[in-house]
Structure formats: C-alpha cells, structure tokens
Length: 204
Image 1 (cartoon, rainbow, N blue to C red):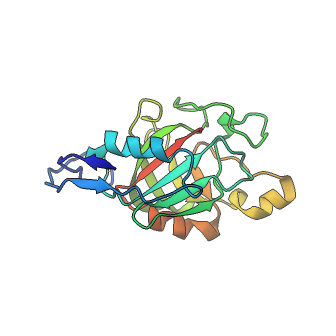
Image 2: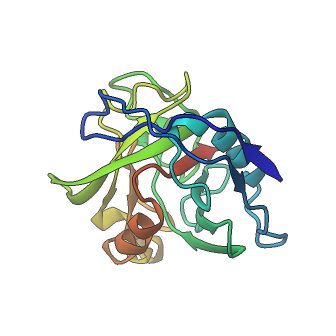
Image 3: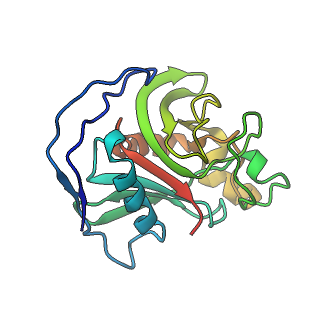
C-alpha cells in the first residue's frame, strides 16, 4: 500500500497559476483493484500519484489511458481504487501519433503543433464550455506532457469517438492530442475525473 506523505495541496484555479497552502492529512492510496480487472498501467499510475502527491486531491480514483491498445478497443479505464472497480471506455488518440490512421499509437509528442498524444501524468482541472461543448482542462505534470495547457490538450466529446465509427471504419477517428470520448460516455468520464484527479497515459 502506497502512503502519501503530509503535504500542502494545490488549490486548482481556472488558470492553475495560483496556489494555496492547504494542510492535508496523510492519506493511503487504496490498493483493492485486483487482477484480472486491474489495468496493466495501474502500478505506473499509482507511482505517478505518489510522485505528484502535492497536485493530487483525490486518491481514491484515477483514470488510465492505455495507448498500447488500438482505438477500436476500450482503453480508457475509470478506476475506483477504494471499491476495486474498473469501467472501460473508448478514447481517441492524436492524429500526430498515428499519421497513417492505422488505429494504433506509433509515437508520443509534447511538441506544440504535433497534434500527437502525450504520455505521462496529468491532473484534471476545471470543467468549462468551449468549442467542443462540455470539456475539462488538463495540466501535464511530467516533462513528456508539460505543454498540455499550451497545446490545449483537454477532455471533450466528439462525433468520431463512438462505436458507430468502429462499425463503419474499424477504428475511431483521431483528435489533435485531446482525450476525446463519445457524447454518451462523457458524463461518466467526467464524474470520475473530478478536478484534482490523476489521469495517466502511456503504453503497457
């Protein structure tokens, strides 16, 4: 069981530019998710939760995007660490990560203009309403994704992220690096990804 040390928590603001010292009790990250339900990247995600503990408010839940799987597979895991439950959803990757549109992530990039997915740990920010409708900001916490805000990498719904795309084309469409899900799945995704929750993306 991983124990998170006593630290100040960051108050998440719209721009994530201000911080506020908030004393917090040392909390344990529950470890009740068991195989075969546990996502392959769970250990890496929990290690990231400990590494970035000062940014993470919620330690009883997290989200994992396993980009070692193709886009026609449910590869976005909504993990309830306390209850030991995992739900999986479809999620897109960036077109810069899959230039031939094979349905597989070939590479990650943190470079502005790459239109690629970035791997690493993110913390969820506030919800907002933008050009894609209901959306949620993300802040990249690692060197591999620390341009997420500048690149406007967010969570949103998209018409090309649903099962009908798989029925027609055998794969989802591609985003510009955002974590896009179907309109039908957005609410349950954002219900888990509350501000201050970890989202971890990578390959198993």
